[in-house]
Image (cartoon, rainbow, N blue to C red; front, side, top):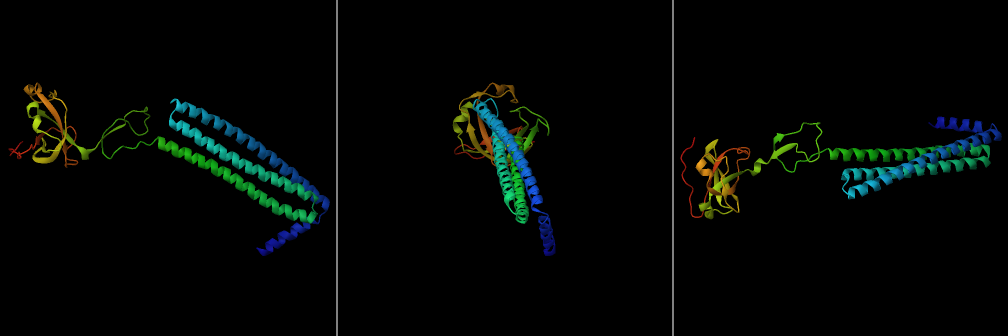
Length: 293
């Protein structure tokens, strides 16, 4: 490595001895090159500022439309992120302009330096300025990539539907990849840990029933296995029994609806299963039930 550095320095010294005129010509070429890079950097800055102005206008327009509920919140947020990304690009382009301007100043200063000193300084300064320009470009690219990443994350979040609770899928009305309108139901979730029996008590007996009283539920599929429950709710007014009541004479009776919340039977009792219920009123005992089939 040391020998290589010596060889590079010797070659630099040999080149510097070719004459002041050659060195000046090289310096003038570097000035022209630096001037061209500065012009290109300023043009890129102007383009970036124009893009930022457009992004700012879009964000302000989206903000007004969102306040009027004419666009979704995601559109307003997307415009905000785009404005921030364009602002970062403008800042990076400004750093590139400053670096190019510094390179031009250094190149002009070398026109009045001695040939050997000019060669050495330009080489080092050129490397430094080039490195600074590379860093500025890398920062701009990083800001652009960061903005694209945030955009992708926001889009993915918009496409994610989170269930409001843990449960079992009862029905699925949309297939993966299918396009649905906003507000369209895609699945029906059932929380089997909170199953209740909707039962009906004759109006004349409802006075003995209160919320919190113990109860038992007998599924038609397992009548010999009572499930512990309790009274969760009592309807505030009486009504006729539902039309799906088995016997016609029962459908014309006034009853009061109650909810019996099951304490267990997770995965055992499911929505829609027919069942009977018993409520233990004050001072009562559980009746002895005959075996059912």
